[in-house]
Image 1 (cartoon, rainbow, N blue to C red):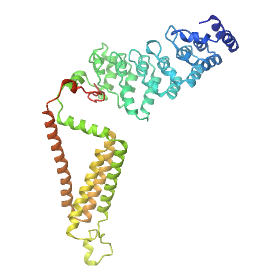
Image 2 (spheres, helix red, strand yellow; image 1 turned 180 degrees about the vertical axis):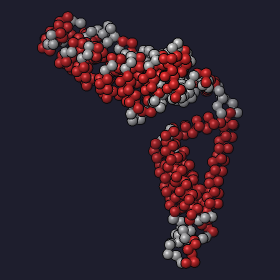
Image 3 (cartoon, rainbow, N blue to C red; image 1 turned 90 degrees about the horizontal axis):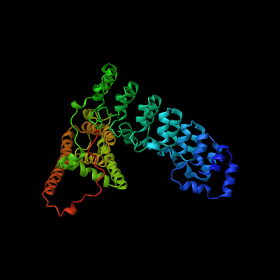
Image 4 (cartoon, helix red, strand yellow; image 1 turned 120 degrees about the vertical axis):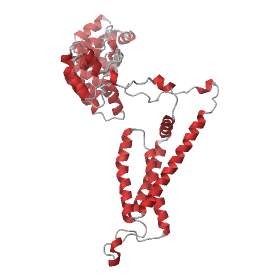
Amino acid sequence: MDPRLIIATQIRSIDELYTHIHENPYILEIIDTIPFINTPLHVASASGNLAFAMELMNLKPSFARKLNTYGLSPLHLAIEEGQTQLVLSLVKVDPDLIRLRGREGTTPFHQVVRRGETDLMTEFLLACPSCIRDANVYGETALHIAVSNDRYEELEVLLGWVQRLRQTDAESLEMQFLNKRDHDGNTALHIAAYQNRFKAVKLLVKCSVVNRNIHNQIGLTVLDILHNQRDHHMNSNIENIIRKWGGKSGDSLPKSKKVSEILRSSIGFTEHLFTQTARYRNQTSDGTRSALLVIAALIITATYQTALQPPGGVYQENAAEESKKTVGTVVMNHKYFYVLRGVNSMAFVGAIFMAFCLLPAGEGYVWWFLWIAVPLYVSYLVSMSVISPDTMWYFSVSVGSVIIVVFAYMVVFFLRWKWSKKKVPGTKSELILEGLTTLDLAKGS
């Protein structure tokens, strides 16, 4: 870097900066062409020269992403030198600087976690929530760094943050972050066990999505790590809390299959069924799914209303004395009404089944649907039995009809699957399967 620019930076002179630019308009461009260099912004950031740093950010924003010969960006230097105000000013201009990977893949977010600057770390999370995803060249996330450096306040903030996320992929991000393994296969919980961090272990195991039985690269669970250490007396409290929250030794766990072993195995009927169902759901557009769900909802509403208010109405409380025994039963008693009840029940059950099949993939959707559908189903059954006591037989027939139809479909599906296995494949080049990137085969291994 031009020595005159260093002097201008040190004396905090913006006027002198423009004097040099006036003498050589390409002076900042020349600096920018060098891949690793201590730019004037590095110097200003390390010294806390806020006004000069903001002027350089205005003139040459690319300086903020340039690393010096030590692998540090201006933001890294400002954090290291404790220039908090300047750090926040740089982040306001470009929040993505928080994710800038420096030496050994360390981001400014990793740096503030390691240094134990809780407030600054919180500001980073608010400014750039995606920074929590980043790992260094050793595969360590901010969670690993917090545990390794005894940063319990930072650990609590990280856990509190990731458990409060509400974005679309919040559940997946929480699962990945809390169970992320470094290059040695160790999660943050493994690190806490290796270093006898009782408080860290206690905080981590209380998170419901933390896998207490995940193996590291050498096949050890958290409990195995504790057993292998010499001082068992010191580890007894940690071991007790691990066991309390479901931790087990590797020998007591079933051996998990590798993805390659699963792929090499033959595809059974159940797996084929679930695969085809998932493909159907994924291929169904949102518009088609919404239209079919509306139709199903209308059918459910109409058939349920028919159960509550059948054609002909019901006897009222002020009915004739001789009819009081039949209060609440159907007035109309025609042979065609029995057929109507059976068809109505079949439509009701079929519409509920249709709505269930159209649900998006996800365990949460299934449980919420069951929470609503089961009481509705019971209410329909009770209403039909009260209004017409002999309806139970017809209802059973209609439900049985739906079950027979579903069973027949399953038989046809099974026969088609068996027949497809006997097909003679074409040439080898025609068997190449493209886009094999979304198989969900291994969990928690």
